[in-house]
Every structure is written in C-alpha cells, then in structure tokens.
Length: 106
Image 1 (tube, helix red, strand yellow):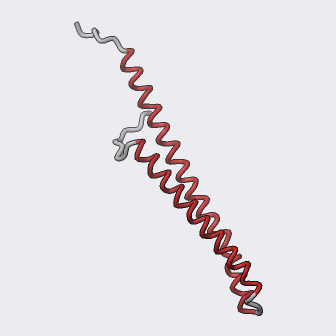
Image 2 (tube, rainbow, N blue to C red):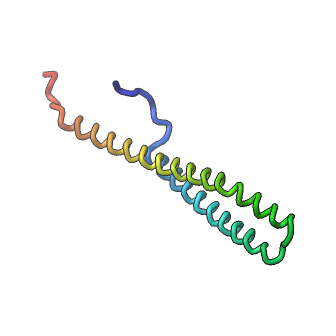
Image 3 (cartoon, helix red, strand yellow):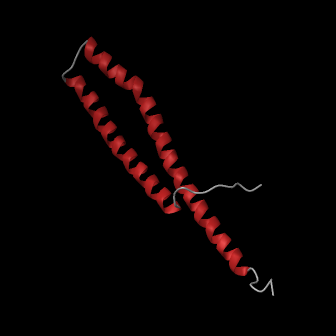
C-alpha cells in the first residue's frame, strides 16, 4: 500500500532544520554542563540546609533535562534519516522512469 501525500518541505530543508536542532541541543548541553559545575562549586561557599536543598533539587531535575535533550537529539537524527529516505526514493523513481520505454504509444 503506497502512502499518498505532498511534502511541504524539501529533504534539504529537513536536513538543515535537523542540523539546527542538533546545534541547539549541543548549546543547551554546554549550558547545562556549566550550570552543573556552578552547582557543584556552590558546595564551597553555600553550606547548610538551603545549599543542600538547592543542589538536591538540581540533581533531582537533571535526569528529566537529560531525557528531554536526548529526545530532541533523536528527533534531529530521525529528520535526517527521513530526508535521506526521500532523497533515495526520489533517485530510485527517476532511475525507474528513465528505464521505461519511451515509444510505448506509437
């Protein structure tokens, strides 16, 4: 069963957007690393219950943030794969069309 539909973006646009998402994910990961380091460094100057609570809250939320970034990265990878599939399918269709006889109706 063939799927019917119209692509609203080109495969090249999909790749471009996927790379943009990937770059944003990398940027956010760098910021999170810097935040993690700042939280860890706070042990040296922020002692007591408030500091411990702050660090614990950050540590509790860290897995959720990592999961979100992981999913965004997966979406980026999926978009690139979809674009490559469209490109390959388009090339295959062109090859099939070129192999068809041109003098069928004579």
